[in-house]
Image (cartoon, rainbow, N blue to C red):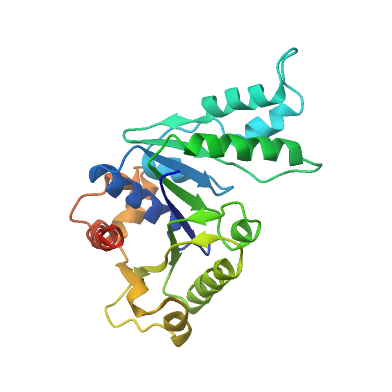
Length: 249
């Protein structure tokens, strides 16, 4: 597997926006192809990337319970459905996990999916996973090995404490994470002061700031992909500098 990056954080912090801008940065700097995985049940990374999403892997999991053609094994059926779910973009491929499991036992289906994704990942040099909000995805150990974990927060104390809890949880689990950083998004002024807990958890050199950018909301309202923001927009300029630092290290 190539270089893997995961993003996590409380809901509403702009995590998916940061994920999309990261993918844009990687493509423009020759780090491609990128496998983008939308692991948020409220799938919208495709909208940020300007990609049309027809089907998710959860749709495939559900259909496996009743729609497997006669003479076809479940493994082959799921592999076919995963290929159909893969969205090809310019420099990236996107696959969305979709909603979580419904009633009943889906252990077999989920095991098949996990094995298929592991095989798929081997075909890419870079992977970016936009995780669902909160800590559950990490506590389930859905993703065990990461080169870089980007925890995204807004400037609120609740968001920052949630970010600290995610970082501490990841550190306590049997996961291999090379580096954990914090990106504080939607910062309104240059005099923002971090709580002491944040500095203790992440360290001063592992915290970056992204200013609030009204263009993000405008693009969202107009249905325009965030990755098409102009080069001189505040959020693009800030994230470009931050990503330069991440990959330089």
